[in-house]
Length: 461
Ligand code: LLP
Image (cartoon, rainbow, N blue to C red; front, side, top):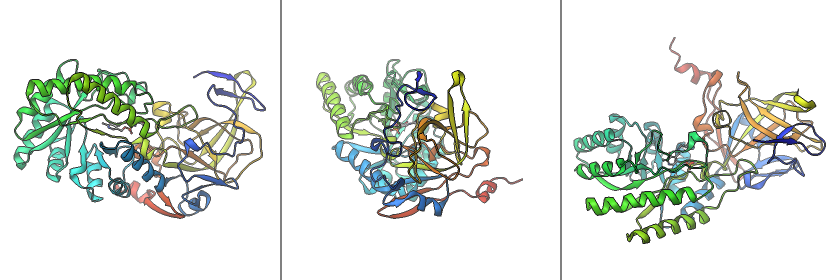
C-alpha cells in the first residue's frame, strides 16, 4: 500500500486510493445496504434511525437490512437462473437467516455440525443442504446422512471410506460431490485462496487425486457420485480464475464420465464473489457474473463435446456482506504525530477485533461514517481502532471523518455482514454483539447480545 502527501486542509498519511470526500457526511451507496440513507446526518436503515435503534440495544451492534439480504439472494437466484444457488452459511448463519434463504428459493451450504444444527432447527429441507469440510468426523457424517442432507462434498480418501461405511450402516445411498483443486492462484489474500495446490482442501486434479477420488466414490455402493466441486477462493473480482478452474475441472469431469462410464450430472463452482468494502472495489452484478460463467462453462463443454451439467454456486459474502453494518460508540479520540510532521486521529470505539477480526487477519480495508449527526468540521484522516489489548486491533485503517468527532458519537462500518459475527470471539472476555434485523421501520433482535452469564456458563471453576 503506497502513501502520498494528502491533499487539502489536513495533514496525514493515507493510501493512494483514499480520496478526501466532497461531503464527509454523505454515504457512498455501493458500500451500503439498499435501504441505508442519511436524514439530517443520522443513518437510517430499513426506515429506522440507528441512533434510536442502539438506544434500545446498545453498541456495538450488527444491523442487518432484511430487504437488502433478500434482494441479493433473489439477484443470485434470478441472475443464475437454472443453477442451484447455495448460500454459504459460514459467512453468517442464524435460524432467521436460514429461513430467509429457504423462502427466497436458495439452497444452503453448511460446513460443520453446528451450522447443520442451525439449518435443521430453522426447518430448512435437508435435501437442499450441502455439507462441506476437510475433516468431518464419523459422528458428523452420521448425523448428516441420518438427517438426509442432499449432498456431501468429500475432501479426502479417508472421508470417502468413512462416509461409505456410515451410509451403508444407515442403509442409505448418499449423493456425493468430490471437491477438487484446480491449481488456480486466485487474486486474493493467501488465507482465503483455496484452489492452489499447497493447501488442505480437496483433491488435486493435476496429481490425479481427483480422478482417483471419483473412482473410489463410484466403487462404493452406498455412495452416488453426482459430480465435482471447485471453490477457488474468496473476495474475487476477476472471472479469469473461474475460467481456468472451469477448464481444468470440466476436463476431469469429462474424463470421469468417459473412463469410469459414470454419469456426471452436476458441477459446483463454489463461491467467492467479491463485494465493495471501500471505493477501491468494483464488484460485478450477479447477472453479469452469471452471463460470464455460463458462457465459460458452455464454451468448455462444447470444446469437450459434453453436455453442460446442472450447475451450482455457493455465494456467502456477496449476499450477506453488504446487508449488514456495525454500529459503534466513539470513546477516546487521540491525535498521534507521525514522521514528517503529519498526524493521524485515532478514534477508539467500543468493539474491535472481537467483532471483526478481518482487518487483523487479512489486512482487510473497511470504510465508515459518522452515523449520529452531520458535521461541518473539516475532515481529518482517521484510524478507527477497537478496545482490545493489541495495536493490530484496527476497525478501519484509513478513513476521513469530521474533525470534531468525539466521545458519544456513533460510527457505522458497512459491509460487515460476512465473516464478522461468524468469526467473532470473546477475546478480552468481550460479549459478542447482537444482530438486529431491520425492515419497514421495525427492528427485531435475531441474535441477542451475549451476557456475562453466557461468558461464565462455560467457566466451571
Ligand atoms: N464455498 C466454499 C466451499 C467455501 O469454502 C466458501 C468460503 C464459500 C463457498 C463462500 O465464499 P464467499 O462467497 O463467502 O466468499 N473468512 C474469510 C473467508 C473464508 C471463506 C471460506 N470459504 C473472510 O473473512 O474473508
